[in-house]
Length: 119
Length: 119
Image 1 (cartoon, each protein chain N blue to C red):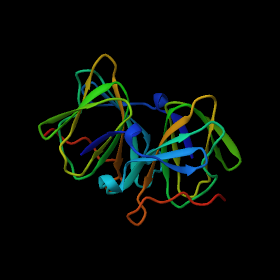
Image 2 (cartoon, chains in turn brown, cyan):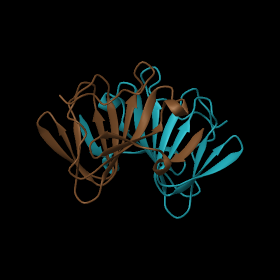
Image 3 (tube, one colour):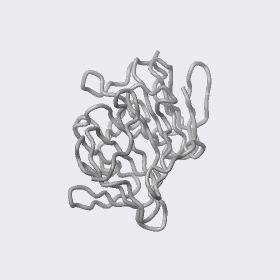
């Protein structure tokens, strides 16, 4: 059992203008999946990419756009996003506040999968 | 790909005073794990129980207490909780606002595991 506020977890720069904090993962002995908190500055985005694992995302605050397959879907607080394996996706921050999202991914070969190159 | 605000998802009463909405799960073809949003009224709680799968929890708002093994840990917005398999736990709402949490669980035999009886 571990309780920690995400603001106390050290983050890394996952992409330009994108901070990622792993709040429940291998360090916490997570057996199956990893919970991360992303803060995406306005005008910044995660790479437009695909991979063979899923994302389950929840928007904590700010405003954003989900780009996928040529479509753009607005995102706001309280939105839940299911990104299935091999679906192209990018999360873009817009507006004055940072887009803050939870993004859960499965462990792959016992590790948290990395951010693949843009495609 | 599916985007839906959790407030538009039909909830069920998971325990007295506890509403649960499945925002990414079998209906969305989630392959590995299920994201749920719980709203726990002040004075209400999830059963004190254990099970062989983990929870990864994130506090969206309100105040609460995590009860586990005779200990009580306060919970506030932004707290992430790793509950490992077989760790006893109960989430209690306190204060004037509902405790709102995300709780992610693995699929077990391809299904979302239910809320076991109190122990």
